Image 1 (cartoon, helix red, strand yellow):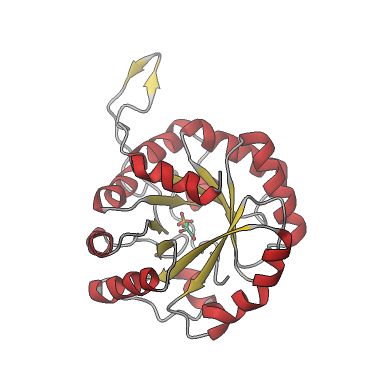
Image 2 (spheres, helix red, strand yellow):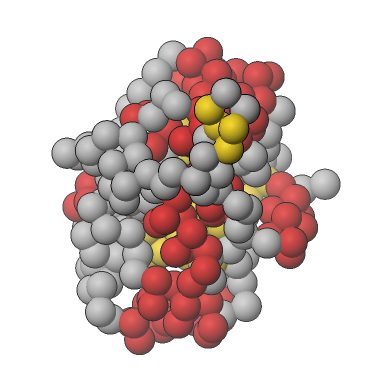
Length: 282
Ligand code: 1GP
């Protein structure tokens, strides 16, 4: 089965969770261990990405370790056309639709396409749009950020992605964002398009994950959380909230369920000052 079909099948049953791991942030074996923890927490797939520091070498080693240690599908979320590996199960063949740099919109894709074909890596086409605050990926990608109150603008990008034949549409607030994509924007885009809607950036609490799911996200992505949080029960509560499972009794004390909710924004410490760079092109 293709990874695209795997994702579509899972999404047909409800919102999925995807964990984002930057191969430049830890040794491959550690990435594998994180992926295993996320698998145990209920994550559906692992994305590998980052705009800087991703090389064919660390991408290959990380993808291999994640597959061996978690068995989850490995989705390459590229930051450019330079690193490539046959160890990934698929590549998000994406266009940053609101970049002012044509390289991020189409040129890098044209450059990479023959290599992807030759290496027989499954491409999954995706429209990728950066919403305020955008963080590093917005800066590096020279994005004309969609303003948080520009609901119609976000809807228009979603419709354009669908009309261009993209398989997926991703609304990105930027890694480490202090506020995720607004729920009302998610709802409006979801109502307008038929292709799956991925939402990420700034989601670090079960409340935020639940808000994205309830608004209509088909897939919720978390990256920073995995780097900040070493409490498996807390990770599980975010994954469960993303997937619409009961999460307020996620922690247990001596076998007794508790109803404690984690304070918004305080789940695993304060947000990082600078988020990961995210991905810009392909
Ligand atoms: C970045 O949307 C993802 O591409 C993840 O963002 O690191 O804030 O979870 P966070």
